[in-house]
Image (cartoon, rainbow, N blue to C red; front, side):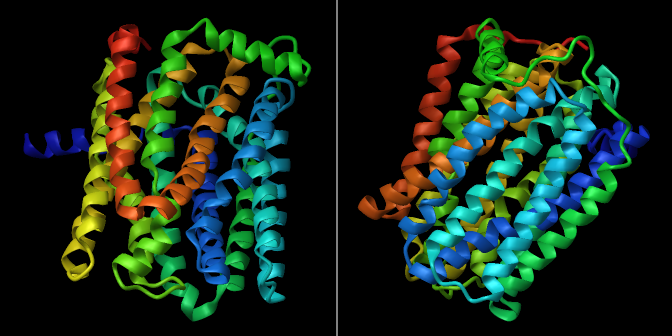
Length: 423
């Protein structure tokens, strides 16, 4: 009986019995592990070049603009083109961009603007790639397994986000930035080899033209579904106010006494949120048994805000006792990561269930802009705020704003709290 109850807590792996979803899932693993090396290397290289969190925070604006433009366009393309073909082309683009990162590092380029513009190019391909990567899931698994499939995909993201920072942060002082970028490029080439084996996935029904009108139609569709709109709103609040990753290099260096380039504290801070997400994903068997998805999202985001607040408090008291407070800070970030993966799984399921197949690409484009763009705005906001009030106040204050904002939204749109998933 105990064994059965324990198995019920573990992730629901039924979606992996479908070969095409399994191929996509493996490709996601390869892509995320390599990509997270770049996620760590870019801010670390910028901080190494400039010694400023303000420069690191600029990754927010250089990442946000491509995400806004190409995320929305990528969603429209996913509704008008064969989704397998689009996934292959954009995956190749990501691999080429990573190779360019390797070239600039190998040549010893010291101009931070070069790194920022390369980052913008990478984010453009990412924004084109992500909507189609998620929009195809409902055509690979039955509806009753959709929440489990989303949870498995979120777990993959978190696993890569753990491996990337841990490996990257520790190895940067050992092998340098160019080697990490090279590993990322190789991983992305392997991912391309996996996605080419997916079946052709042409649009169902009459294909739409991927223009401004198509993008506008996606927003009109979204405006008619307030529950879906709320799933975006709560994530914007959570990420914009509660994602202090742009401050991790400075916190690791100034609060916890780490080196200016990488180091184990730097690696732990970047890995802590996804590590919590991995643990949350491993023990995500419960998500398939929850029907109140709206309420679950609200609770998860409040937990995220409380965890980030706790992290900021730990940073405030860190000077003089960094050893103990590192453990507290990492623990808070892990709790936040577990809450975030639960929120993401439920929000993705709400979105995929609410949309018809001919609209999924465009709504996933909006989803990509919100999920990935929110942290970019947070990078800029936290970087500039920390320059004025310090990293601890910027972080803890952001966590408090997450809680206030989420509760306010829940009170404004009670239909979201009452929303139930019906397979």
